Image (cartoon, rainbow, N blue to C red; front, side, top):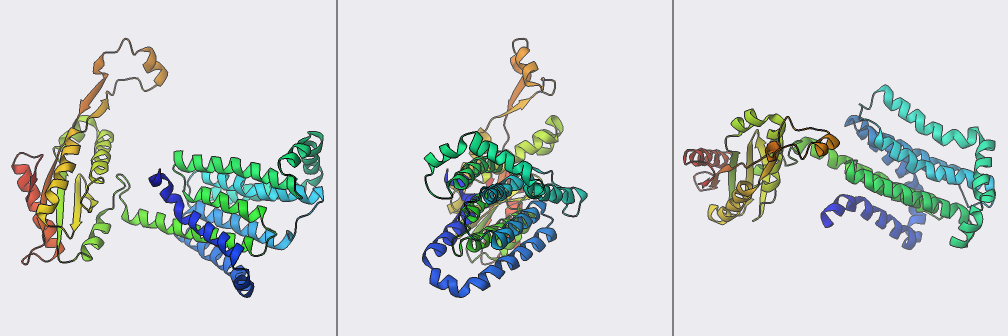
Length: 411
């Protein structure tokens, strides 16, 4: 559970800090209010520029959405109103943000400079303008649900305070939006900042009339965007796309910062080319992912990397060879004992068709296979002080492991 929540923590922490400042530091915020307000616009411009530079359309659109929402709140919404026309427009403005945010997140990935991005901007601007372009129809729709449908009395029972109808409508809309955002971030692997932005938008809209609230929430939301944008950019540069492990560039930087005592292990998947030729590259990729997942679980403080192809590296800082052997043996054993189920190519891909033919098919439609790895390990010595030399020594030990019959550890 902690691992699942970890990606959301930076943004949620910033929102909590912003809320704490708004509640407890009013005197300080009074002196810095103008600076903070214009800092929000400045951060928006910086984030938009970085999003375009790194070609991250989701972050660019989200920055625009936040800017529009913040500007309208600061310009047109000064205090709660009891007029239904104003309430209707306010509710739509509040709900427009999460709706547009989810639409942007679901849009196909295209370059920032692309016709589809202009169409996306036009879509959420049209959604924003709809109540104002056709206010009579919108008001009739709002009144029909609120008054004729009896929703007003029900909402007043749930939330018996002034401004209650709009407040409860926003609560309901944002609870649904937050549920959708969490599901999309988890199941569709959309940016983890999505639920954080929904929460920020909720506070930004529901408590817009409180001093400093909207400004601090905007700053927290934009800083969250910047943090997630930098994290994603770092991952693109340093993480291997297939396995999720840090790649060669990350390994080179890690080796530059090693101290006087360390051990480096090189490992290679045994007979991988033969396996790839037999089962195909897709299965070969699955093997690499499985091996990487087991290597990533290494104990003893080891840092795993994908060196290239079917080769992996583990760096143990502050450890001698003898101190790492048990941990490397555990990795080797875990990979050797892992059974992969390979589906035959002629097995029906359609689930229903496969279900109908299950009785007719033999147990040979899948195959259980396993792979092994060979490991070479070397440590820094008084003769071999350069990390690159130690890496080459580990590579030589790897070849000795292969010559010794593979599926073993040599030093």
